[in-house]
Each structure stands twice: as structure tokens, then as C-alpha cells.
Image (cartoon, rainbow, N blue to C red):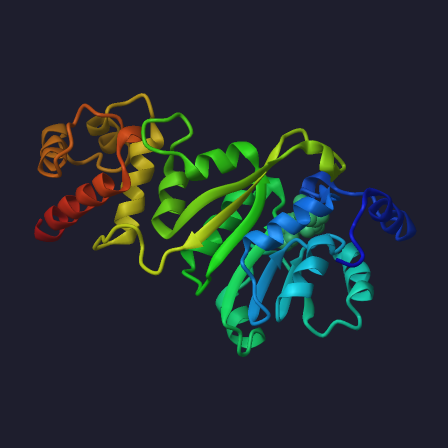
Length: 292
Ligand code: SAM
């Protein structure tokens, strides 16, 4: 591995360019070579893979990705980092740096126009913590032709992604991620390996994207509205949570009837429902709404 971003080198580059890192942009740069390697290995890249990296910073991970993949598109929001990245990758045709906000990027277009002839597509990133969930949702909801997503995120968010029903970490983000992907934690990472140190610990998470969603449902929008309403007021039993969150003009007894038809006790709480049960409920509600 060449040019590993050891702490001294990171500080030297930032100093030379007169850059002070911004907390507001989630700028905690990774300086541990072993963890960089673990992230790259987890993505299962080949020399025919295309990679989208979100937030390359000063290119620590980008560098390692470019050694394995066919092409890396790195999207960085902070304009001040672009000269560093362009200088670092000036003679590396396979790295392309785009100045932009990952939340605004049309990834379908990026993939269609910038990844000719790649076998598998991946997103690999040490994500800015302030915007982890919106970026993840943005990526998954677009249904991109991705093989996997490997991301470093805050440890507590990682626990939410893999959480099972009935635990306190389980919520609508768990359902959304598990609907589109199979998540697993690759490794937990202490805060000591970043410059500057964040206040939280991190974890590397791998999401293997499912060819088909985990459950079949007639209307995704309705499904996710039901999921969100069910978790909206966690202390409420389902019949009440659904009424106050989504179906204010429907009587409780009718909602209880939907739940019973789906094989779910109306007195259960949303956080105890697995994906299959949310899907059954969504199907029952869909069929009632389309016959109303
Ligand atoms: N990849 C580098 C590393 O591992 O050391 C930097 C990771 S740092 C946690 C997050 C990076 O994301 C920063 O470079 C930050 O400027 C960038 N960033 C923040 N918000 C962004 C956004 N909305 N779109 C793209 N990049 C963003």
C-alpha cells in the first residue's frame, strides 16, 4: 500500500494547505492503515469494480480504493479540499473527483455516465456523521445497481442498522435498511484513530444489497408510512400509534380489524414487528384502501 495517511502526513498536508477541519462538515479523518485496509477488503472489489466514495477528505481511503478498483468517483462537498485531491490524483486516471453534495447528486446519472464497463458497483465511505442517515436513505431509495455499500459510521447508528425487533435500537431506519439490504458490522473502531477525535466511537458496516427487497409489498410508500407511524410514538400500542400517526379519520376498531386480519395483536407495539409482519399489515391496509 503506498502513501498511507499516517497521522503525521495528514497533519502536514492540512498545515501546508492552511486548512482547519470543520466539525460542521463531519471532518474526522481516518489515519489508521489497518482500518483503511479492512474497509477496502470488506467491499470485495475486483479490478473490474467501480466505486463511488462519498467525502474523500484528503484522499486516504480514495488512495487505497484506487489500488484495487477499476474506477473511483469521489464526491466531496468542501471546496477547500479539491486542490489537495486533484494534486494527489493528478496522474491517476482512474480517480475522478466531483465537487458536490452527496445528498443532491443524481447517482443514476453518475453511474450511467462515468462508469463504462464495470462489473460491480460499490459505495465505500467514511461518512460525515452529521448526515449519515439521510445519505444512506438517499442511496437506498434510489435503488441503484449496487453490489454493496461499506461505510464507517457512528457505532450507535450501526447498531440501529442491524437491530432486530423488540430491541431498543430497532426503529424505522432498521426496517428501511433491512428491506433493501443485508447489514452486518465488520469491525468496531475507537475514536483514537481519527484527526480530530470525534466524541463517539465508530463501526464499519457492510450492506449487501438485495436483488429483490426482503418482502413483497404492493405499495412502498404506504409500507414506509405505516412503518414510520408505528415507530412514531414508541410507547403507544399499534392501534393508537397508527391512528394518531397516519389514519386519523379511521376508527380504532377498524384499525384493530386490519391488524387482526394481518395476524397481529392490536395491543402490540410497533417495535415488536418484523419486516414480514409490517408487509402483511401493509397488504391488508392496501386492499382495504383500494376497495374503499
Ligand atoms: N474519507 C476521508 C477519511 O476517511 O479520512 C474523510 C472522511 S470525513 C469523516 C467526511 C468527509 O465528507 C469530509 O471530507 C467532508 O468534507 C465530506 N462531506 C461532508 N458532507 C458532505 C456531503 N454532503 N457530500 C459530500 N461530502 C461531504
